[in-house]
Structures are given as C-alpha cells and as structure tokens.
Length: 398
Image (cartoon, rainbow, N blue to C red; front, side, top):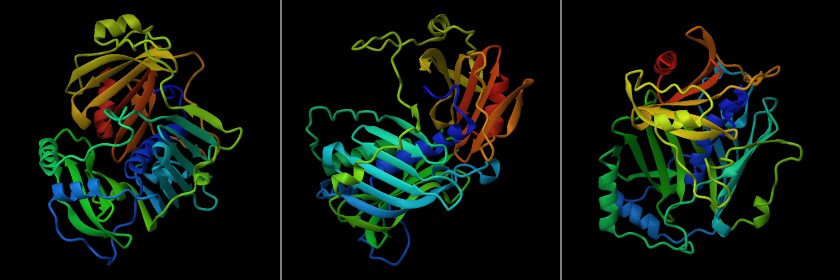
C-alpha cells in the first residue's frame, strides 16, 4: 500500500502484473507447459492424488525453460512493453534450501524493453523491471502454524483431506484430479472456480507431477475467456540440485527502489503490538481529511472501515460487499504538487474518465478495474474485480 498514492501509470500497470506473477510463481514452485503426447497417470480420486503428492519425496531442486503469458491488460490500452506486463520467455530455478529460493528470469523481445528478474529468498523478495530500472522489494507473509516446526509438518490422513475438500466445495467448484501430461511428465490437473462472489475471476488451474508432487503448471482465467489471463509454462523441466550461486544475484547499482512492505503499523513503535483502528467514527477521527464512507456504494452494503498507512501517513480503506465481487476504496490526503507522475516518451498512458467533473484515470483489466482520481484535497483509488462501469458508478457515488 505504501507506494499507491504517488505511483506512476507504468508502475501501477506493472504492479498488477507483478502481484499475479508472484502469486503464480511463488505458489507453484515450478511450472511447465500443457499439451503434448506424453504419458498420463492412471485415474485417481482428488483426495488420493493430493495425499500421494504430499507424501512424495522432496526433489533436490528444479530448473526449467519457461514462457510467461500475460493477457491481463489489453495491449491497445498501453504503450511500451515490459516483460512482466506483456509476457516473455526465460528461465526458472527453485531450491528448497534455506527456507526456499526462487529465481525467475524473463527476457523481453529485442527492442521492446529491458529484462526482468524475480528473486525470492525465504520470506524476502525483489523484482527488477529493466525497462524502468526499478526494483520492487518486500517480504512475504509468514505461514500460520509453521513457527517452531523446523520445516517438518505431518501429512494429513485421507479422511482429513476429504473433509477439507468438502469444506472448500461449499465455496468453489473443484474438479477431480484429471490425468494429464505436462512437458512430457505425467501430471494431475485440478481446476477451482468460485461458486459466487467471484467477480471477474473465472478460475484457477494447477497441474502437479504425479511422481513427485511438484506443481508443473499454473494459470489464472477470467470469467469471460477460455484462455488464461496469466500463465507460466516451461518446455523443459529438470529435477536437480541448484548451485547456491544461481540465487546470489543483486539488482543493478543505481536502480530506483520501491518498498512494497508496510513501513510501520498504526500507533506502534518497535516491538509494540499494532493498534487497529476500525469503524467509521474511529477512522474519521484518526485521519487528517474528510472521510467519505457511505453506508452503501453502487448497490453494495458497507463491509468495513479501517485505518491503514499510505506512504507513512494515516489513510482509510473502506470495503463494500463480500468476496471478489466487492469494491474497495482507498482514501488519503492529497499533497500539493504531488500529482500522478507523467510518463516520458514511449511511456504508458491510461484512458481518462470524468468523475463528476474531475478527471481520473482508469485501468481496465481482464480481472478487474482500478480507478483513481483526486477531489477536495483527497486522493481516491477505487478497485474491485468488477467491470469499469461498476467502478465508475462507485466513484461517482462518493
């Protein structure tokens, strides 16, 4: 959140792609291409396939040639090209050593922009965008229940796995373990789609190696398309130890740095427990601008009003509706002379939209809409997995 208020158009676009790339790349440690005429594993119930994957022996490491597909943003809406925004080919390495390491290297097409790197080392990550010579860095959240386990967790029994799948099916449509082949490896593929409140998200697909349980393909689909919006795939995969030197790389000296992790918690010093400020009255008293938090917005009931931090200053997050079909509004005090950055020649520009006489900018993606504008000394960002018309209606109702 700390970089949202004065973020440039290029960075706003890039962060949308980066967040999804990190989700796909980080969750599916190695990904590979679908299709082909390779061997397929025998049919198996989903719970059995999951249990076998969890019980499979760990691989020493993974390396792969990859292709990254990104259809999140319509190319006709942007100028210039970044590998993480427009897609690219490259290489992936992953190792379970020292809490897990991942390196994703993407090369842009000749003449379209600089190369990009994604490096994850335990809970820390950095992402380098070569076209803008910018480094995005931060920390990943700790997984609950892993502290003190020494990295060893007991594998749940078949009955427990079946119970958890049953709970998940109350909220999502889950396919069986479909026998498939990925990059010449026998795999099982599962598709998960939201039953309700899914917004523009159509579903997620994950394929894992039937022999060692390693994920080999990850894809995100929009509700209006049968083709993946985001996909990471590889033509060749090897399961082998990766030298530590592969991950010992650093961003170029002199690159701009954007910190994506919160710089502090509300009301807390070092070692202090974060103080939550929740509720319209409390948040209104905590911020230094006039809070706009109607009880309903674009037909959606108010869900929560919470104080957050943006660039080290108190701001407000107001959410409406539930699930992915909801809308969030971020409000922060405008600073004189701190308008949105203008892109240089060959940069990125977004379509302009009028919000009750105020000019705003709108990013329309296959998975949702981001709209930003300033009015009355307040910066607004309206975001949701909704079509542009819904985001615009919400903005005009503020």
